[in-house]
Length: 371
Image 1 (cartoon, rainbow, N blue to C red):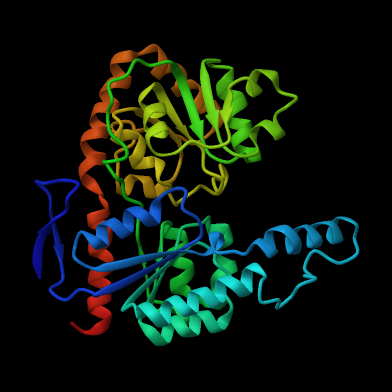
Image 2: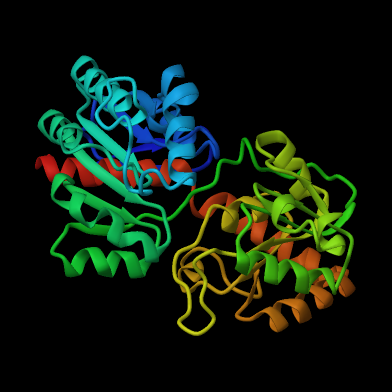
């Protein structure tokens, strides 16, 4: 084993295996959030040639202007069922086009390691091409409730990562090689700016019924808030108290870092949370918000304790009434809020970087190859 220093933290030593893959292909859906780009940078910083294939952005104008509208109106008018496609198998359709592009890239680049994230729904021949070229690792970053969507693909993967301990148990029960791979933080993107606080609380993420329920409850605590995310305005047009706090459909990178820095308490509400059954997996906010030296208030997820200490480095609430009470307390007690933000900052910026994440993947690759 050899020790290297990851560029995000000059004082940090990350242990990597002696043998590393020379070429790495990352297959993901879209470029926002910039998760794949951060992972690719970490691979490149180790001297590995890396490419990213954005499958959902790999499309044709014919699909956008002809195929999609035709299918949409045909389904709306009930001329065809939702499961049917008028252009099934057409070479310019999105699925066919991205499948061919993925195969061509794989044959040209010849990656020794392929890391797939998200629910891709590739054709079997694409996964077969990946499997014949190099080691194929899959990172399941979705809700545990969606695990069934990728079960039929599992035989194509040499190793499966999950962000949820529950999903990991599901995969292992099917006899698959599986481990937990938690999200990391990029401190070049998320860091303190020492800006004045202009919001009491904020939330960033796509609209969901559970998220609206929580947002309405938190708006009763303070109306000085900001919400960013798709579908919020369309879904809350009849909720003036909430609608006025919606600032935009999306916010990324420098603007997102600035928002976190300008907010007293950042809220995290998962879409897979269940107050009766509990939640497991954690998303990227768990480390990104504390990395800005801002207090994070999150719904409960048992896996969060693997990275940060609840009520010391972030605040956790199991129900909406509990979250309302804790938000009120944090807004009233500046000292407590700032102490939690400071402790969270110290832990988040050292506990899990993309250097750690890439080291885990490379170690599993070397073990698989027998190095």
